[in-house]
Image (cartoon, rainbow, N blue to C red; front, side, top):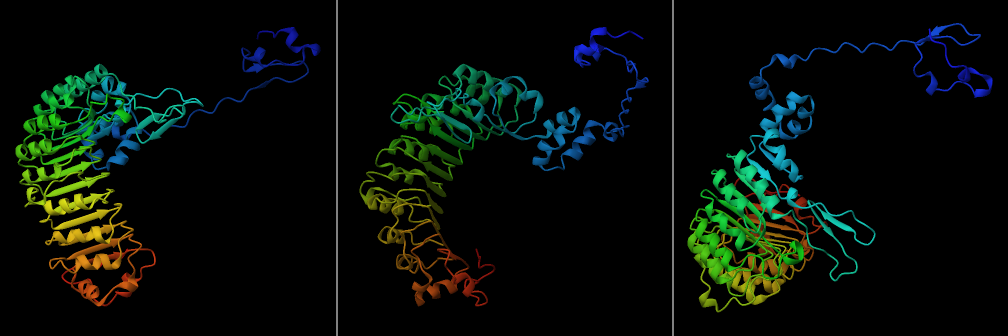
Length: 473
């Protein structure tokens, strides 16, 4: 047995030093004390053998396929490396937040994706925030605030165009069965051309930071049916003032994507010509969504060219149409079934009148959280005489009299929903409105938290004509 150093055991050395004992054996002796041994470490318990090792990959894939996707991604993929590899083969949808993962690991980790969201990964990470430059984060977007600037909101930073194109080229080469893609458009759009050539079955495309130039490759997608375009906005994306989507981009889009069924335009700057081109060329278009538009006056009249349109949805529009033109030149969407207004400013009487004239054949009218919809403005909805379903939510300026004057004029009304309209009171319901309620197939009446009509109608049969149907909130 080796002898320890004398200075470690001497009285003046301050006792034993822990570092000096690291190399000592388990059995050691101190002067005046009997020898003793350090207790040996307990052996690890015997683990049960992994029974799944006997299963072939095909059988284990069939078992894992029975799990819902949240469990497949959270718990099952953490069991072992084999389960991680197999669960990756079962994943069909994924949202990526790191662009380096797209170019290096994505094809090997998830080889069978059908739905891929690359937009969060295309946003460059913001610089380290300081006291002078705080960072505002909303979902996947982070914006730098500059307190000394006016306005203090800075532009959203994206990866370089060549980096985006290289990642899209990898996706095009390794995911030929991709059905849905969300990405950021680059200026040259070489990556989108690769996607169009490599993903022949792509049916749904969502493009952010779009310009007229970036829409040129969209015409190469032969089977595209659903398209969502988010135009480049100079305050948000840091693009030039002449960027964005205009009539030129809408015309390119219309001539290239003639099989579109659903189209959503966000922040576009078109006018009559662009919407008319979409209506003439996209004969199969059934659903059109226009959000936060910056279109010139007169675009409403172009909706008459959409010969197969069934749903028109306006979202977050600060204005509808500044100059809709004479009523006799507006035309009408004869096949339209549903008109939906969400978070729109409805203070322009002339524009709202033109909208209801174009959509006079609609069967459904949904108004949700819109501003400026007073009784005289809502009276214009009487132009749509075929309404069967009316849904009002968050219309705080509407009164009971204003609703009654319109709904009693609709002979085909079958369903009525009124939620969160504080000026509509139960005590103001007239006998004519009560008779209308009794003939409805579906009634959902909750204008405010104090409304007791739903409870008072229980057991009376009112609102239950037909099959189902009184919905109590």
